[in-house]
Structure formats: structure tokens, C-alpha cells
View 1: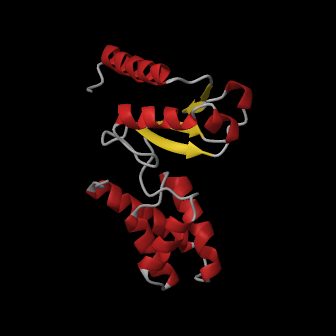
View 2 (view 1 turned 180 degrees about the vertical axis):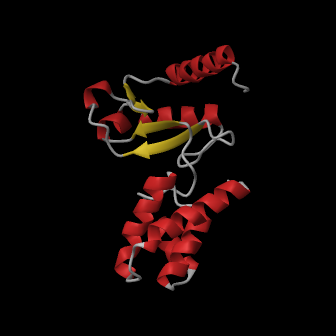
Amino acid sequence: MILTEEEIREAAEKTREITAGCDTARGSLIPVLQKIQDRLGYVPAPAMEEAARHFGIPAVDVYGIVTFYNQFRLTPPGRHRVKVCMGTACHMKGGNIIMESWERVLKIKVGETTPDREFSLERVACVGCCTMAPVLVKDETVIGKMTPTKVDGMLFSHQLANKKEGVPQ
């Protein structure tokens, strides 16, 4: 995903603010990256470069840590986050089919954000609603007994609501 000049500037500035109060011990790197993600919603390349400068390490080392731990996002989250449960019950009841349906309608893969940044698609280990499998969480709403038809309907409803509000598609 291509960042705007404003996003690049913001990522660098906010990372400098976060690292300003931190020591340069390498053990502080992961907590700093977590703070960056909390603040920005993800860890973009300019933030990794600033963190690397602060800690006096190559940027590729920071990138290695960000890509190693799945708690970190490399792309900005969408305005609407779709989290598909892939826990045992959901997996057995077709969670993978639900994931494929979202990938198809949004034209993105898991871990990505749509180009208009309206939706991001995530895989989660367990939502804790096994009796409702397969389950997804859209924003903060848990939706159970998902089917590919419901996926299509949810996206269509979203598009209709945006049309009523005059949001360009």
C-alpha cells in the first residue's frame, strides 16, 4: 500500500514522539513498536526506519521483528475491520469458506486493506462464540452462523448505506 506524504510525515513524527522518552536498550524495541501500532493502527516503514535510528540498528532488523510477530500490522486498518474466526469450531463449520468469500467480495487477501481503506480483513484464532460457528466480528459486532450469502448481503447493505449518505463508491 502506498502511503501519502502526510502519512509518511505523521508516522515519522509520532515515532519520534514515542521514542523521545525511551532508552536505546534493544529490549525496549518491541514495547516501542507496540506503542507505534497503538497510535497509528499499524507499523509503517517510516516508523520502522525512525525506530531503527533511535535504537542504532539496521531498519531490516526492525522489519524482521515486525514481520516475525503476528501482533504487528504492516498495512493501515480499514475503517471497518472484518475478523473471521478460524478457531476449531469455526474452521470445522466452514470458516475458510467465509474467509474466501470476504476475499472474493473485497478483492483482497487476509491481512490486507482495500485500496479505498474502507475494509481490512483479518484472521483471528478464536472469538469465543463456538456455538454460533462460523463467526466473524465486523468492527465490534459479533455475527454468527455466517454463510457466503450473508457475506454478499453485508457488503451490499454497506454499499447501500453509503449511497444513501452520499459516500462515493
